[in-house]
Length: 287
Image (cartoon, rainbow, N blue to C red; front, side, top):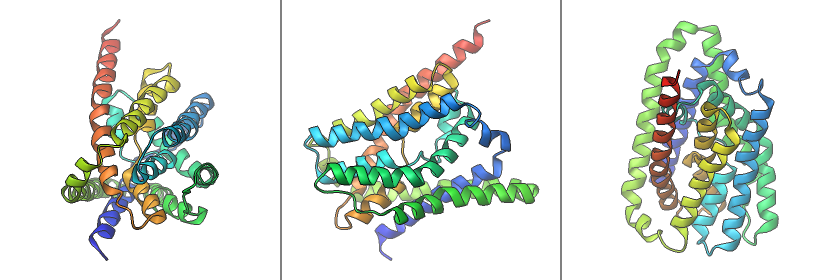
């Protein structure tokens, strides 16, 4: 197993471990939160699974994007919501059960929507995605559905063990994610600098800013819902996108573009989180 495969495995394990910890903490009410709000559920699906893929289609069609950038943006647009966002949701004044419920719904729905999205991109572009439905289902099941189900089962059958497992598993997931990202950054920083041309930065910034704006608008009028959907729409987990991209074009180097996306997404989310935190503090102080 080469270094690239090890990094990808570390990121995948970080996802699975993190989702497992959410299963350890989740309650029945958490999982039903978004299902009990059909209007919010519909707007969330439209923002993440309709509007963002359409934006990527427009970017790939109208901008002269290099192939790695086009493939990465496509993979990001059809990937399910990342499992590491609830921490940001809380900082931005979001509702944690909504974030968890959205993760569950998108993980299940993406088993159907990701193959449909792949078929759409195959029809639109001359260099289509070749990843099949079985590969997509395997990715979603192994990194999202199964870890969450196992976490829920452990919490239900062994609640004390679930509490003891929570902190060490979360620590392992954080370390794996940090190491994976740092190794990617160390090995690709020169390539990152060289990938800043050809509309790449503009396309990524447009993806993130549009995601924040679209999610915020469709998540409203409740501020605690708007912040969760905004961050979820703008952010997708890089390991899933890397897996989809590498499966289609094994000879291409996608890590630099994905690391650039991570950096820009993190930086652009900071002012939004601070703005939402300020609004939450102001509303709580208002009698």
